[in-house]
Length: 402
Image 1: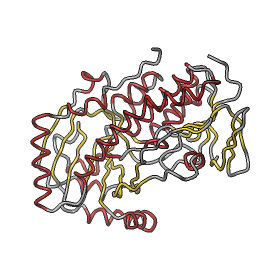
Image 2 (image 1 turned 120 degrees about the horizontal axis):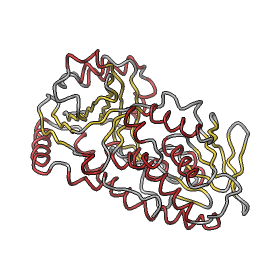
Image 3 (image 1 turned 180 degrees about the vertical axis):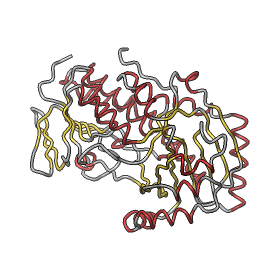
C-alpha cells in the first residue's frame, strides 16, 4: 500500500463517517473528519442495528460496548392497531447470524464511535459546514463556510441524505425524494408506562399497523423505551408539521392520530419528554456514487426508506468495504477503488431499496376492508414462512483480510 501524504477528508461525523475514519486508521490511512453540527450529543432518535451491522462493529472491537449500551431483542411482534397479534416471530439471530439485533439511541452510538475515534487520535472538527470542493491534479481541497479549507488526497461524503457533498459534485442533479410519510419518535421511561405493557412487549420489536398510521416501539435500555411512527401525508403538509408545530402541539396531534391504537401506544406518546419529528426521504438510484477524487457513502449515496431497518448497518458496511478497497489499491488507483466499491455495494443496496418500498404499502392509509385484507395476508404469510425470506439482509458478512 502506498503511503498517503495528505489525509483523506471525511465530511460528516455520523456512524458512516466515524466508522470509516476508524477503519482507515486500521488500514494505515490518515483521515480527518469534519462535522457541521457543534457536537455529537443528542443527535436524533433511536435506531435498530442488525446482525450484519454488529459484525462490522466487531471488526472495530466495539460490538460488546454497543450491545451493552443498547437492548437486544429476539422477537418481532406484529399486531393490528387494536393489539391483536398477527404473528410473533422468534429471530434466532445469534444462532443464524452470529450477532443479535440491537436497539440503541443514535446519540449513544455516535458517542461510542466518537470516543473511540478520540482515543485513537483521529481529528474530528465540529461546526465545519462544507461550502465547496476544489480539485486539481495534485489533490483536492474542502472549503468550509467559515472561510477555512483543508487539502487532502480524497474527499468522502458521509453527510447523510441531505448531503452537501452530493449536491456540490453533481450540481444538485440528484435531490432526495419524499417517501410519502411523515415520521416522529421519542423516548419514555419504563416506570411511566409499565402498567400498560404486556408480557410479550419486553423482549421484542413491536410493530402495529392501523388504518392511517404505523407505530413501533421497543426497549432501548432496560429502563427506557423508544418509539417511532409514520403517517402518510402530502410533502407540503409534512413540511408544515415539521416547521410550524411546537413539540407540545405535535404531541397533541400524534395523541389524537393514535388514540384508537391499543395501549401502550397512546401512553408512549403522552409520556415522552421530547418528540423528534422528521420528514421521511429516500434517494433515487444514482447512476454514479463518485466524481473525480470524491465519493459518497451511506445515506449520502443510497439512503433507503426507514422501512428497511438497515440504514445504519448499510452505512457501517460501506465504511468497512471502502477502507478495505483503499488499503488494497494505491492512491494512484483511487478511481479503481471507487469503481469497485460501487460495483460491490450497489446490487445489495438496490435489493434492500426494493424490499423497503414494497413494505411501505403496508403503512399507507387503508379502508377498514383493505386493512383487514392486509392484516390477514400478513398474518398468514408470517405464520407460514416467518422472516426467512429476508435472512439475506442480515447474513451479509465482510471479511476484512480476504
